[in-house]
Length: 357
Ligand SMILES: *Cc1c(COP(=O)(O)O)cnc(C)c1O
Image (cartoon, rainbow, N blue to C red):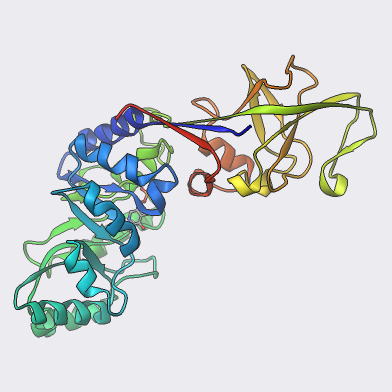
């Protein structure tokens, strides 16, 4: 027996369409890194391409190469930049690296020189995250010495917001202003700064290209959303066994939960090895029909236990871990984490069932 992960491609398409519709100034890309946040890039990305998405962001070259045959005729970029010796593979597979250092630029420039033709370039400019990007001094050197970009056509410049989830955070405006000042040095380049929550900050942030990921998959990242996004996931697990225990008996490793009354404990075959984070120990919730049932005791690798004393559950009954009412956002909160981590932790052992697309 296993658990079932139902992935609704139509919901993902509807979320992309909503983002494209509110995007008043430019194109709406799709971020499909980390296997489309765990939902399966090989199914998700072609469905989005068929719906009209023309630009896709992966993180790594290997992710992009796997997608290339599935996505003819669209742009595929990688966010994590160039690795040494990889430039030729980017060209061979028609993948554009986001360049985030002078070293990246030098490698890409050398590749263009070797090919004897111009290559498209996308530059990531630093505005506050201090992760992967060209800082102010590097941007200045690019404008002072145009030879550094010889053979490269800067088609897009981008940056990344540090806290777009909080629209009133003044750092959003400060990052935008810094970005626009940098971007002005690259005439004709498209500008992109908005992730999912940034996409809801309005046209000033939407610019020529937005880069939502989380919102496509139904995570609710912004208080400015017109409505909740379509939940794209349902995760259900059949109960393997039910045990009747006495008050005072404990459940699970280290006995971290003790029954205060005679209790019925249901075990499902989903554990932290499947992405049911161990921090859900004594905090997670599943649903039996419309009733929440608490996760009790420590989450193990392949199993987890729930108190079903108050519901008429039987072995074989389904417990719902993720659905439209209790989504990855909620489970993430119960785990002391975020929906992003719930999604990208989704295990390989589920029976995946795709619908729509
Ligand atoms: C992951 C990522 C995104 C997408 O972010 P979401 O919050 O999932 O929309 C966009 N841009 C960059 C640079 C990223 O790393």
